Amino acid sequence: MRTSIATVSLSGTLTEKLAAAARAGFDGVEIFENDLIGSPLSPEEIGERAADLGLTIDLFQPMRDIEAVPADEFARNLRRAEHKFRLMRRLGADTVLVCSSVSPYAVDDDDLAAEQLRRLADLAQEAGVRVAYEALAWGRHVSTYEHAWRIVEAADHPALGVCLDSFHILARGSDVTGIESIPGDKIFFLQLADAPQMALDVLQWSRHHRCFPGQGDLDVAGLVRAAVRAGYDGPLSLEVFNDVFRQADAGRTAVDARRSLTLLHESAGLTAPPAPVVPTGFAFVEIATADTARIAPLLTALGFSRTARHAGKPVDLWEQGEARILLNTDTGSHRPEPSLTAVGLESPDPAGASARAESLLAPVLPRRRAPGDAPLDAVAAPDGTEFFFCVTGRPAPSEGEATDSSGFAGSPVRAGWTGDFAPAPHTPAPIGITRVDHVALTQPWHHFDEATLFHRGVLGLRPHASVDLADPYGLLRSRAASNEDGTVRIALGVGASPTEDPARGGRPQHVALVTDDLVTTVRRALAAGARMLPVPPNYYDDLAAHHEFAPGELETYRDLGILYDRDEKGEFRHCYTVTTGRVFFELVERSGGYDGYGARNAPVRLAAQHALAE
Ligand code: MG
Ligand code: MG
Image (cartoon, rainbow, N blue to C red; front, side, top):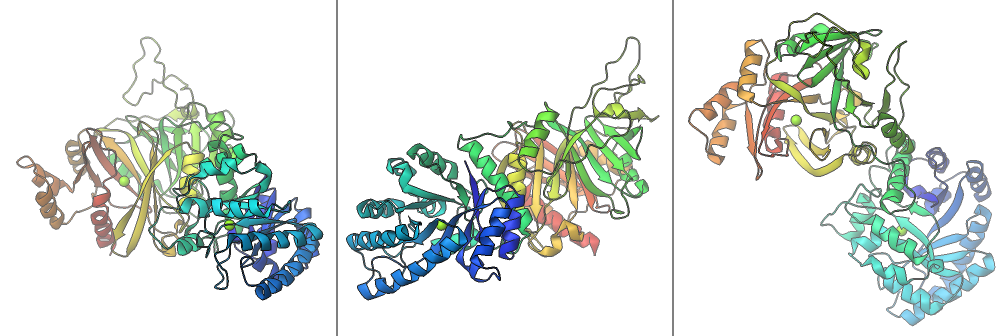
């Protein structure tokens, strides 16, 4: 279906909003009246600008407090409407949004409302425009779509229909199946917004916390399906009031919005983008650093060996079990500190994953390849992290040939991306790490919903509940996304202030590594010289109050800086290295189906990291 976005959903001047909407691929816009009033362009020039950009003007909005008012008040309203209808002709907009009245003069009289809307529609018809009547969830007498439709039906005028707004309908918990009994040609417009569930006054909820479909908790897709079943064939239009979008870059918001609509088409069973290709594991994690000496000793102490070097680039492959870390020194000058820059995901269909990403407007990166390289499909996430879709080749040992523990057989080629690496001599010294458990990525300030939608939609991961974590200097929000069997887990975190913005060198990221025996692994790491994050003794006193441990168990955890958590499914033991540059490592042992990330321990970890940095 055609796509549209209300200018109120984007920041900037009207000209900037139109350009951003067009660039993101929208077919049309709703012009919010205040955007027009504040623009130096005439209505004709705005119409031309939109047309030049390939945008139709699908709606002019809003007109308020029109209906069910005393006669003298209504006469003034008609005069105002006449003026606005002329303006719409100049603009080239043929539909106007009329919100249900919140005026103190409005009376609870459906017959009067229908009569006055009919007269408004007469005027509109003469001007060649039509009126879409929308029930505001906080309308004075009309606050549900069913009620708005009853009035429109009673008015029975060809230039009068309803506008359905998913926020107003779903925020009130209305049953959307009633939409199917409205004739499709009487649904003049469909405005879409999602929102997180909140216990908040509905007007404040609407004005400040709307978000794009798929980013909140409302069943927007179900509402779209009902409207389509009713026969609606107009645009799917986003009308999102949100404190963040008002100040965010319009281009970025428009892309986020367009991605949301593509995913909405998919979940509503309309047109579908290429099917999601869910990753099946981590192929590698890439750390960029100008100087490998900053991080190589830590990797060595953690039991990694430098097993290979890229044939054409200054990239080393470090391995232990199925955990692979690339150290890339080709950083330019802007990333001297070790930082997590890329994640390789094992993909059953890299080309398919890339096509999916492209259809969802994820920037597809130029393939990094040197002569002879295996091409790698990669996209950039909203936080700038590069995600590679890859296949890690398993070596096929030829007969009689010994393989070392890293899997290198000395035979020249491994299939997949590792085929670009030439084996390096090394002596494996593993400490029990088997694979990557999760990567934790810091998101740009206030772009959490965008990141979650990206990881769900583009990467095909399932988002988990969002949790708030107390940091000594602010609040962190964290939300994980994973594949079904938990072999790919990405924890997204965002700070409560702009200073946490990764672009400004904010909070470090981390890579969590799996071991089946954390105590042994940590002992070996410490013996090899790893510096682990010290945990305050008070933490262990608190732990003793909450759980019973075997004799000596808690003392061991205290000695080694191991944190502990338990849920209904199982147990979680974890600990952290100190931070190097902008990266630290976590060692984790999951047992019995524990599916979390030790969130209750995060404040202790954050405090300990601050203490160390002081
Ligand atoms: Mg609306
Ligand atoms: Mg973690």
